[in-house]
Amino acid sequence: MLKIVAIMLSGMAVGFLLRKRRLKVVPHAVTVLIWLLLFFLGIEVGSNPQVVGGIRDLGIEALWLSLTGIVGTVFFSWALWRWVNKKGGKP
Image 1 (tube, rainbow, N blue to C red):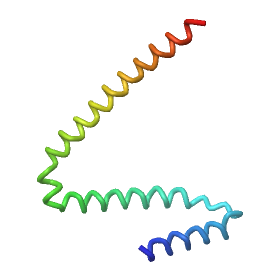
Image 2 (tube, helix red, strand yellow):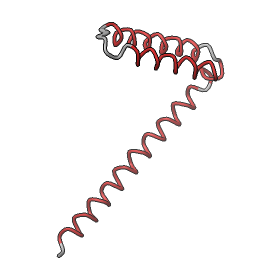
Image 3 (cartoon, rainbow, N blue to C red):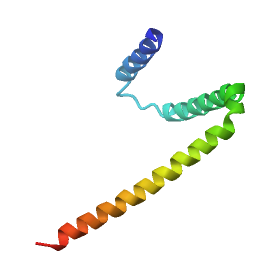
Image 4 (tube, rainbow, N blue to C red):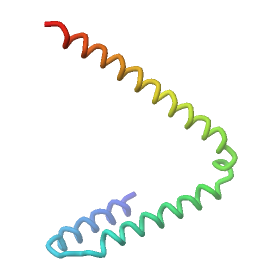
């Protein structure tokens, strides 16, 4: 963990020292590095038999959480809309 913090702080220091320069390659390099990290994360997850074996359960749980989140949001938005219009209509 200390190594990660040291790398992050050194990156911040380099960024601070180079803040006046126009570095056009940095956004492209960051994008490529993020793609590589996602690719390697996919390899790591795909090679884990527990994750691959439980993908059906994970999908069902994700679907359940999404649907209940949507229903809850719609319900509480509707309730708030009624409450605001009820309050705003009366002096």
